[in-house]
Length: 258
Image 1: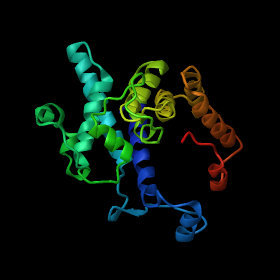
Image 2: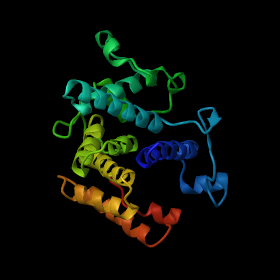
Image 3: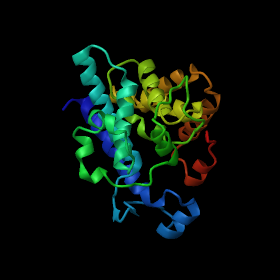
């Protein structure tokens, strides 16, 4: 396995572990977390969905993002042309089926197939975000230029890491992250962070340092339309991080895009 492949596996596994650790406290305040787990907070897996270490809907959708990218790559090489966001959209439609959603009968053979959707453990309802579910129920056809809604929640960025895996330019990675998120989240503050994450992850996969990876993501975000709010939130986070490991209380003071 190459260094890049090692980093990709580490990204997927690290994200899944982090999500599983936080699954049981997702809707708790800091004070509630400390009352339950002590002053140190969560230091291991929490109980959620009837077990410890259960994956979340974020992890499910991240895997289906990767599934779509693999299929898009194969189609691009075999057919010579491919609209990647459309292939990823169909991957999200497969995820939608695992969460109890449905697709038109005429589309079933085309959409619902492949190895990943055949993993029984993924057919488990993991409190999927309302925006993702409603957008997929409506077709999941949103684009940056023609938004499906005005949502700026975190449901776009949480699944976007695989958009940084393909070998391509930062500009292309940023566009993919935004396009994938815009399938369900139409507000700029909902899809720009997905583009930002894609660039940062891609730079890390390429072997760059965290600082250079974030610089590359900053550059792409600064050039994007309607990026002022997102850019301000990112810059505040970077400034806080530069002063050392932040405390939970300090993290709560950071501006959000929601």
